[in-house]
Length: 196
Image (cartoon, rainbow, N blue to C red; front, top):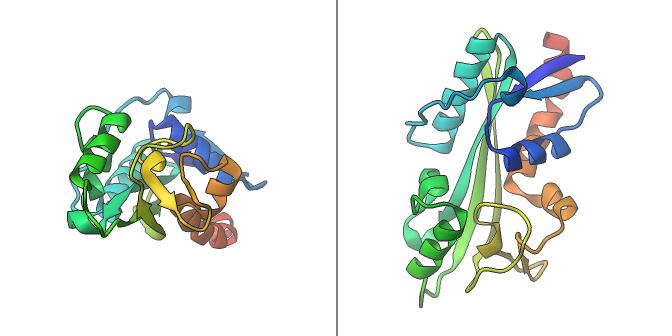
């Protein structure tokens, strides 16, 4: 059994990661388990850079294999915004972030968008691997759904005729950007266990 540290303070992300990345040989622990409430400045210029900053910092600090993710919404018509600024786009939280995007997309025909998740797994010695997942959809015309978090309630999946905010967590955890990145990580799990 090996311990892997999840370098996040976001309870929604932690829950998703634990649901998707369950493995009998791995015990996932969080910063809260270590009573660590430190926030690291994410000043990278991409999802990958931000995930790497967090993973390297906490892997070194706690001497543990660490995974970190950085993720967000990329809207074609907004030149890729909110992108790496997704969590703090409005400066006021999830609901206001959604309203800001909807306001900027008013009367815009091209509503294509995708979620990106970049996961970095880092060893205490600084060696790392990265895994990128995406899911493509459209920006809805209004907020719909009580599930999920972030931009889930305005991210529309035509094949389900629902937003992520309306989708059952079991379905979302199979098709989301985070799930797609974690599938790639899971393919490496045996190698990670063998290298411990």
